[in-house]
Image (tube, rainbow, N blue to C red; front, side, top):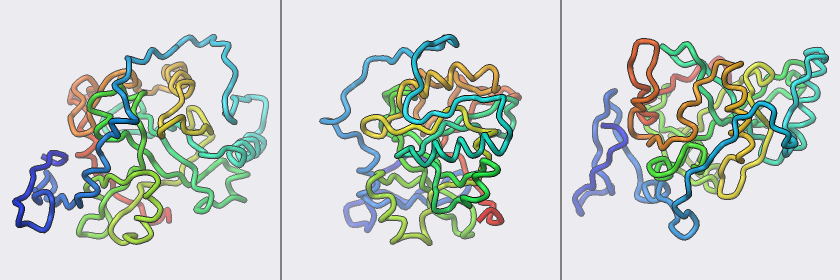
Length: 271
């Protein structure tokens, strides 16, 4: 299965055998990429289970430049306020919603505004921004709660058709930009243009230590889940990226497929 690696023979060029996936994708990870998925033992200790507050009447102040909900403002006023807060934010991170096939409830994702790829004049009027997505570190996902994992760039390798995306490629955040510049025709950081005023749950905020999402962002996600119709049952559980989530059933009773079996089709008209 995709996401399960077998060591190649010592005489082979690659550190891992090329294996067929469900969609005939070959896994081509270099040795350094496989090492990138591994946790730093000195940096990452086995955490105690995190308890997330879900009280809607929490009195904690907003952190970073988190946007408040203002129903008394016009669309353009809200868009301008959002823009000002994004400019002030260092990491420009959001938890956002996306629809998912066969699910009546929305999925949540961690996204980062890319100001260079955003039409800023339009963003100030409409609240639409170009964003790049982040996912959990694979090794963290196997032993830590979703809310305790480090988040790394969601970078995929192009399939042979040059348009749809195949295997996830593990690249450390500090190496992502440099790697993409060198291999821009091979790798793609999954991205999209979305309406943040419509789809944001919380943000903008900055990474906590070691590229983790701050606790208050998770608390806000849980508090707003019911009103926004978001699936959040996985937030405080251990859900390996390379395994199907049997506790997250779609409208037909099927488990949510492993993230490493999820394939994106790029809408090139967006770019």
